[in-house]
Length: 219
Ligand SMILES: Nc1ncnc2c1ncn2[C@@H]1O[C@H](COP(=O)(O)OP(=O)(O)OP(=O)(O)O)[C@@H](O)[C@H]1O
Image 1 (cartoon, rainbow, N blue to C red):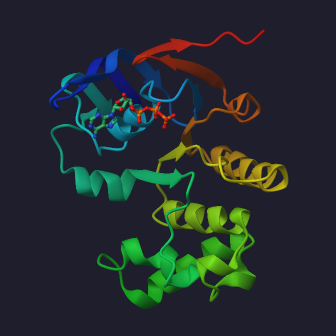
Image 2: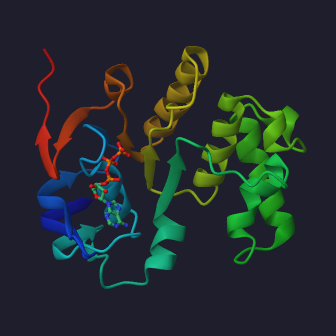
């Protein structure tokens, strides 16, 4: 489903950074891949390449057989990708319901969108917080709101960049439970973390070091 061949990513600044080096990976639909690795090793860069935010400098990435460097990356991101972040990235002046709806508002009728946003929020046990502002929520509730926003458009791939990095252990368990349920619905999950316990939820754990990706053997 996702196939990267000889992927290189070089940021061409004054001092070029070779962020991804000869990446070769095959990810099947419904897989859950965890990526561990030190800070600056290229983990977010890899998520951004899969999410169509960064383009490979060399090599190819195909998703569902299509070379995503050659297609409209906006509609690819909107239709195929959901993204969640460590810091939730919610808009503080908008309610939970509005945060979930906002990215899709230009593309769908408001009424229908509101109904589907409510439905997803209720599934994620956020039905009692629809009209709260993000600042009035716990970290776990904020992340559940961000997950609702990410899955509203039923993406096939959910990219998770340190999704539990700002959460205590109870909220961490809760969010990992939510991701487990989504994965059971055959959503492919690619999750970057520093936390080995979180990484163990994956079917495969990969290790990134200095732009190079390798399979991690857990002892
Ligand atoms: N837009 C950019 N321009 C230039 N260099 C960049 C850019 N984005 C990332 N880098 C560099 O690419 C390398 C990989 O960064 P990346 O964010 O992918 O690492 P990471 O493993 O996700 O780190 P962390 O765990 O700290 O989030 C780093 O050396 C970083 O400084």
